[in-house]
Length: 562
Image (cartoon, rainbow, N blue to C red; front, side):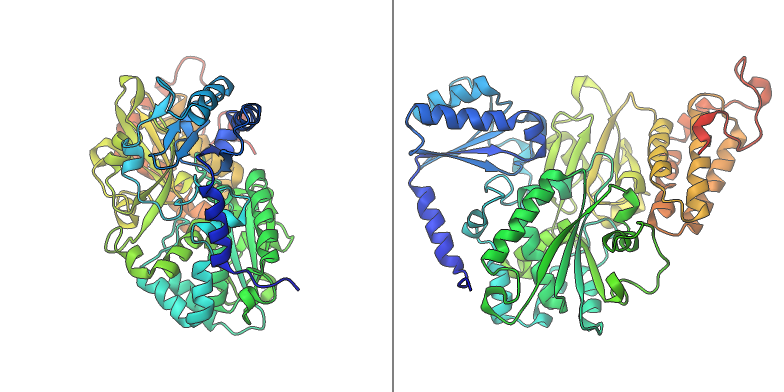
């Protein structure tokens, strides 16, 4: 049997090995940069260094995401005794120059495409979950351990009771990062107190909001952080088995998670006797087919069990009766990725960041009409204006800000009048939006808000599992109303019917998908109602030439037929 890993020894060996190199070239190999050619950049760096006989003095490290996705591929050069240099838009020609002038020549490329170290995109971040994302090789356990990885698990297993771990999570104020913001400690207490021979912990990595890729990046950039968070959750609650549910569209995350699990098992950080203690816990990756509804916990469990991923009525709740009838706890990937820092550094440090009711940080995926798209981690409560105009660099091409969509299809649109709103659970909910998993889509003045509502409704219509009538039929009908309005053939009575239908679907749907599907409609109507009114005609007399009158609520073409 393999000996129990000595975390300090592994870290010391790794740090000593790093110190032998004059330079370390950190190449982003997360999904975004790989799609822009990062694999070729890495190969070019390695080949040039070998040819220059400098590979003994320079280490090329494939890393996770440094965040500034719109400027990839990204290469960070760390030099002994000097500040690091971040190169952007690196192609093969730029890689040749970096090797010649910086890695061999010893000085940053003169006139090179370098990101200033003090840009607001980085200066305003407070990284907890993403602390190692652009600094370590996701496929090397040793890299994670060298940065302090698995120390929190060791601390918990050797000096804390399960109840003390839950107390630490409670003191931190951590709330679920999947969207609802449910207190994490409360969910852990429910599983801890639930009777049962077997219990399960599930990491929900099935994010599917348009424009969102926070969980994907956490999983493919720092997979061991997710595993450690799950192991801590299992120890605290008495679970002996874990599943990470990942959609099939995330092949890189799946591969890296599976390699991380194998490495953790070899090091006895997972398995029958974790770190030589009596705690046993194992993890499997389960791949979903990409159904948005499987982000809902009962549908997710059905999919893990091999059944069709459709929601079920609650109660019983998963902590009472979950996977295969056993008590089960489901946490979002980002929620679990916060846990090692809370247990390792103490809950006070986490609770000191954020607001009174929304503690810690939140990871957001910036998308849409902004200069800098990418991934950021900011303190809860940061004003939306700082994110959009400082970190994201504002709206390109001289256009004006119109709205920001948070929470994806379940969220809402925030207009310019509320740009100074603190970004936390309570303030976003008060505006008719929500935190969601962290997608933040910025829209400029050219965007038509009824079309935004139609886009999200089309998404919800297509993603409805069809189990309950309000969602199955209601999303089709709501889309038909929105489509007719957007095409300029809607009537004022259509708007009345649309609002009434939205209320019905919200109040009677079985799960969160249908219950929240009307949110983009409600928020755009509240803040941009005049845009709807401008598209409406009074009655049949004013229909455009050639448009046939239709009964209220009836779809005018195949767009509404499903």
